[in-house]
Length: 289
Image (cartoon, rainbow, N blue to C red; front, side, top):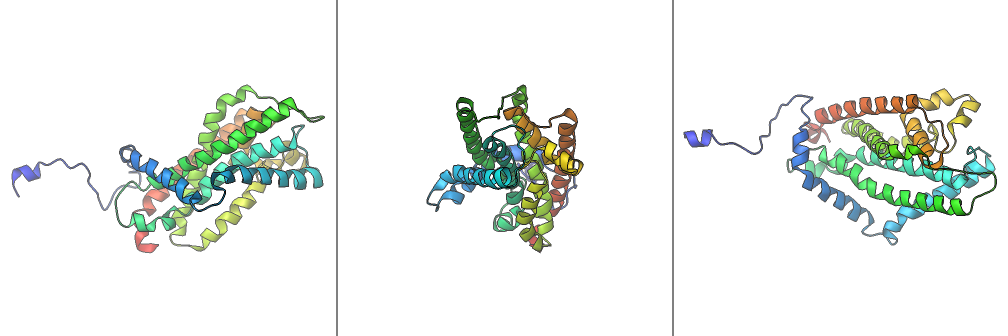
C-alpha cells in the first residue's frame, strides 16, 4: 500500500465497537436532510390511502372531546375548575395526544424499520427523531382547533364558566419540547426492550391508555387531591406538563415551579437512559429482531 492511500482522509469511518456514550450527535446534523425525508415519508404514507386524509387531525380530537364531556363531565359529574368542558378536555387531549403518539410510534421503531437498518448506515437516532418531528404537524393542527374553540367561547361564554390566557404562554414552546423528549425517551427504552421481548409491543397501546387516567387529562389535579390520590398522580411527569399547558391557555390548573421542575428532571433522566439503552441496542438488534 503506497503512502498516498495511507494518508487519505475518510469522510466516514464505521466502527464495530464504540463506547456506550458515543451517540454521534455530529452525524445527526450531517444527516439532517434524511431526517426531513423520513418526516415527509411518515406523513404521506399514513394518510395516502385514507378517504378523509388530514381531516382525521380534526375529527379524532373533536369526537374524543365530545365523548369525554358526556361521560366524565355530564354522567360522572367531574369538575373542570370552572372552565368550559370542551376547552378543558381539548387542552388535555391535545397535549396528551402528542406525547402518546411520540411514545407509541417510537416504541416500535426497531421492528418497523428493520429492513432499512440492516441495509444501509445512517445514525439510527434519526428515525425516532423523525417521528417526533412528524407528529408536530398533527399537534399543530389540533392546537389550531383549540385556538378556534377558545375564540368561540370568548365571544359566546357559557354560564358560570370562564378562562383567560396567561403569561404562562411564554412557556409553550418549552412545554412542547418537554412532551416530545419525554415521549422520545420512554419510546427509546421500550423499543430496545421489544427487540428481545416482542410481547411488550401488544402492551404499549393499552398501557398508554391506562397511563392517561393517571394524568390530569380528564380531571383537574384539585379533584384528584380531593379524592385522596393527588400525590400519586403528581408522580407522573406528564401531570406537571399538562397542568402548565392548561394554565397557560386557560388560566386554570395547579401550576407551580416545583411541579414543572419535577417534570423537567424526570424527562432528562428518562431521555438520558433511553438514549444510552438505544445506543447499546442498535449495535446488535439486527441479529436478534
